[in-house]
Amino acid sequence: MSEKILVIGANGQIGTELVIALRNKYGAEQVIASDINNPAYAIRNSGPFEFANVLDKDTLHHLFHKHEPTQVYLLAAMLSATGEQRPKMAWDLNMNGLLHVLDLAVEFKTAKVFWPSSIAVFGPNSPKQNTPQYCVMDPNTVYGFSKLAGERWCEYYHTKHGLDVRSIRYPGIISWKAAPGGGTTDYAIHIFYEALKTGTYQSFLSANTMLPMMYMDDAIRATLSLMDAPTENISIRSSYNLGGVSFTPDELAAQIKTQMPGFTISYADNDPRQAIADSWPQSIDYTQAHQDWNWIPEYDLPRMTATMLENLKNSLV
Ligand code: AKB
Image (cartoon, rainbow, N blue to C red; front, side, top):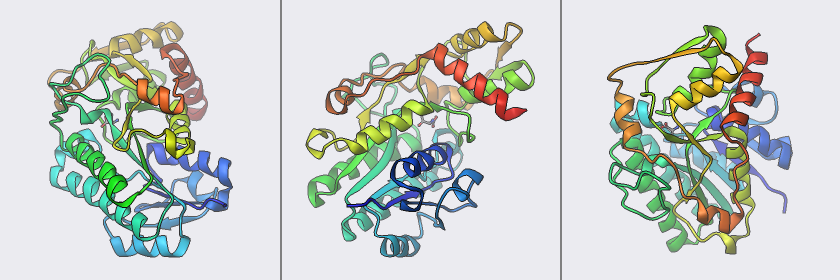
């Protein structure tokens, strides 16, 4: 059967790259990108696009009816830092957007649904190192508890309706093609732009704040591997822990300095994102993703840093 894929929230940091990867894999015409905003150049010029607000269920219904997607990727969400500024709106978007898509996927018998969760589902009382798949989870951001509730809804729709919904708890994603969208891990992208533009960066997270991160190519590969895995291999229907590379702002700055010896970093005091970062894991145990669909990250800190600097250098000239 030929696949028809609908990506909702296609203009964001992950969507911009995932749509291109899906179009390369399945054919440009098979992948419909959709977003509430005007499409990014790469999306507009490589295949079909539809405007849609995930909170507008009638428009979504129309898209499902028109395209009858076999796979749906729901990427529209408000991230951790922005979510704290607009808590009710973050809850509404992250929760009702997901419920709309789950309902429509059941109604239209969509074969597979992908929905991203996050390391933000963990909280201050979750173990910090090698955070296990199952442990205390007491997220204290709206983003975090909307993702945790979303995970429960995904598992519920799988159990009650037989929906083949799959999910990953993304760490901070590092990339250069599209800007990040208001997260706590965004410093690890801003730092590269500022290193190349001004040679210096003020980090909003403190020097020793260790967080789980991942280079975009690994994140796309993980997403496609999960979606390609045979159904019987998928033992987790809430969301899989996913591991990449963990580092602090200090370690990232030191790595940038190996290629740009004059680069300097300073640290801001009292940024509200520090408390969010302090409540999150430092590293992730991804045994289950490895066992079920063979997950192994490929980018470590030196490779990620070299790739970011090289690509951004070319794109900024
Ligand atoms: C954020 O910082 O909010 C996101 C995430 C870890 O989910 N990048």
